[in-house]
Each structure stands twice: as structure tokens, then as C-alpha cells.
Length: 253
Ligand code: PEP
Image (cartoon, rainbow, N blue to C red; front, side, top):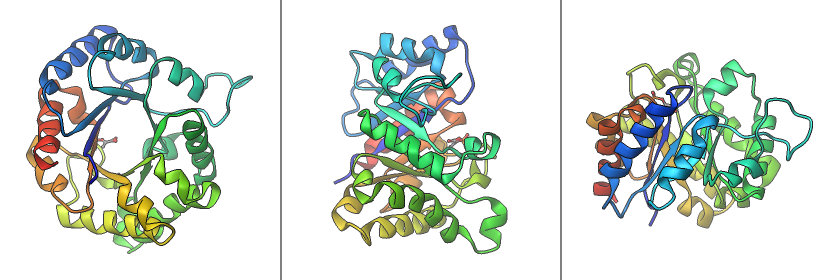
């Protein structure tokens, strides 16, 4: 049985004061939930606030990226070991915004994934197609390529230590959500791709949906057989909305 995971991706938002308020609000709101795993991924400078405020709670925290290098002369990068030092459990890898705005390739993302795993972080590997790719019937080919980047470089065992997030690019931050059937179809495809190498690892792999998940649509998405939670952008910045989505995960567990 896969435990649902609800993870908030704050992106480049907030101040110290806002991060503190949001974390305190989430902490109070999810206290008592026992069947759902909850995580927040604030910007790098605010990770210490998560470490301070969440240390005694069941809420985990993580980063939005990690360097592909272990350390050294890589100006501006943050290593997996540093993230561990700040208590991170998760690291989002290969988000579509990093693919689009930072030119990240599948090969680079596979190296980041490996760095995360070898340092004891749980990578959340994001995959997903653009609207143009969906409309030209390329959804499966695109998400297969994203998954195969890690599968080919690191082998199927790497997926025993990670989480996948299916995030259709056309649904991120747009208010347009994939229907439960559209999302389920891609999640089943992704699980099958991993199962072709190891059914056991595929059965245990959490595949999250991301793309305008909100309190009003979370329950029906998470109720799908192959949807094991959500990666939440905009709605993770409002404590009440994020808590409501966590509640949907708790109730569907
Ligand atoms: C995301 O960027 O990971 C995301 C899912 O964003 P949103 O929920 O705002 O669509």
C-alpha cells in the first residue's frame, strides 16, 4: 500500500515572515493527520526556518533543486550534502520551469537524481508534456523520455529511492487541471514503464500529480488508482488550501 504524499512547491515566493506564518499555519492544520505524508519545499534561504519550526513535527521539507555536483567550484549551486545538513528529506528534480528557463536536460537531471539518492535525499522527479506535445499525440513519448533519462543512467533500482511527479506543463499555474481520467492514464503508463523493469519497484513507487491541484479537485484526482498524492504549486502558498489538499490525501489513504 502506497502512502499518499502531498508536497508543496513554493517556487520563488515569500519572505522570512511569510514563510514563518505559512509553516506555522500548516503545522497546526495537519497536526493529527496520520495517513498522509506532508512535505514543503521552500526556497533555499528559508530551509533553515523549516528546520527550526518543523523539526518536532511529522512534516518533512525539501528543496526545489539540487546540484549535480558533490561540491567545489560551482558558483551559485547547492549540494545534496548541504541540503541534508539543513534536514531536507526531499529534493524536487527536473521541474518543467527548470527545464524551460534553465535549459536542464534529461542527462543533467539524471545526475541530479543520482546526487540526491547517494546523499540520502528522496528525489521528486518531475515529468510532463507541453500542450503542443499533447495535442500532437506525443504525451507518452515525452514522459517516457523523461523517465528513461533516469532509468537508463541509474537503473530501475533508483526508483526504489524516489518519487515521480507527473506535471503536464499546460496545467502548471494555469488554473487548468488534467481531468482525473487524463492524469490516471499517464500515471498508469509511467508505472507500467517502471514495471517492465521491476514490478516490485513500480508497485511501491509513489507517482504524484501536479498542475493546478486545489481543494476542489484534489480528492477526485487522488482517488485514481495510480495517483499517490500531489505536488502543489500555487495552492501550497495558502495554508488553508494546502491543508485541505492534505486532508484529501488523508481521507483517500
Ligand atoms: C508546480 O509547479 O509544481 C505546480 C504543480 O504548480 P501549480 O499547482 O501552481 O499548477
